[in-house]
Length: 120
Picture 1: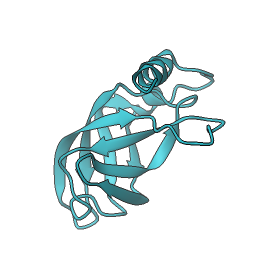
Picture 2 (picture 1 turned 180 degrees about the vertical axis):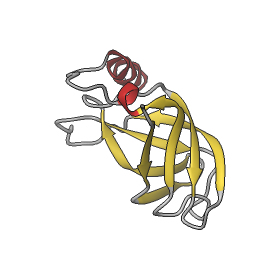
Picture 3 (picture 1 turned 30 degrees about the vertical axis):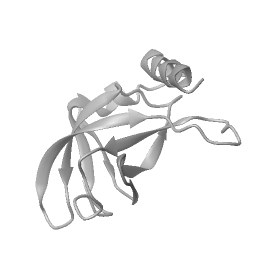
């Protein structure tokens, strides 16, 4: 039986006016996400809540060899999602997000191209 995609928060970065960025980041050549994902968060103290996350690909200099997607929760603060929290996508399995043997997922490429177009 397939399980929901999930990860443990290893770090957070709050950018005022933008939102809370969750680490780890995910290589776009290995993972495929929609531009917006509904997430379920369980904190180390057992608090459970759901939120919407924007999936963004940051553009940095020098250009990375592999672009990475990051989860951004707009309405959250660092105390809301502490390190050690478990984040899951309740409507997607691990196989749907990281299909085996898939070199360049089409939706990841679509995200990358749409993001690139916004920053030109």
